[in-house]
Length: 187
Image (cartoon, rainbow, N blue to C red; front, side, top):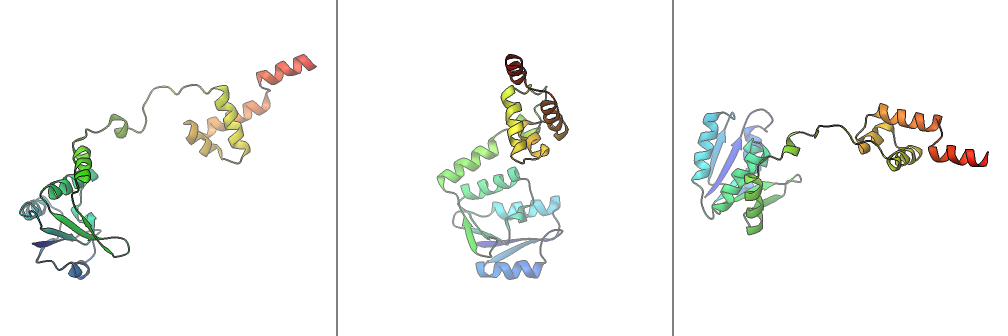
């Protein structure tokens, strides 16, 4: 069985365009959903559940599954475990196949089962930033002298551009402790 899945609605090409694109895959049947509703999801799940070893699911784009990355991985994992091959098109219009090799199945299984990482949920870990070392300050000066903007340097050291500008202004307005000590010895 070669089932073509066509998802219509916002962000998807018109039905005629998708059907024309899928024709080279020679589908036996089409599952066409106009709106990504709960009822539509149930219908397509029923059709996908009926696919088994050797069957092929043909889609104009992998975006047709309309889900989060984790949800899409779960759909693919289920299909691949049942021996279903997914056929689609790359950016150049070339046909490609996705199937479940042992390594791919293990990776997908791990990704789907993996709990959300607390670091992934929040880009900031909270807490105070560690103070900059003298080596950090020297590197900030070196990067500024090489032409990096305060914003770029701030991204590297997790500081605001304003704080980087302040560090650069303070260090040039006053001498470093080593320079003051050297001046006292030689002056």
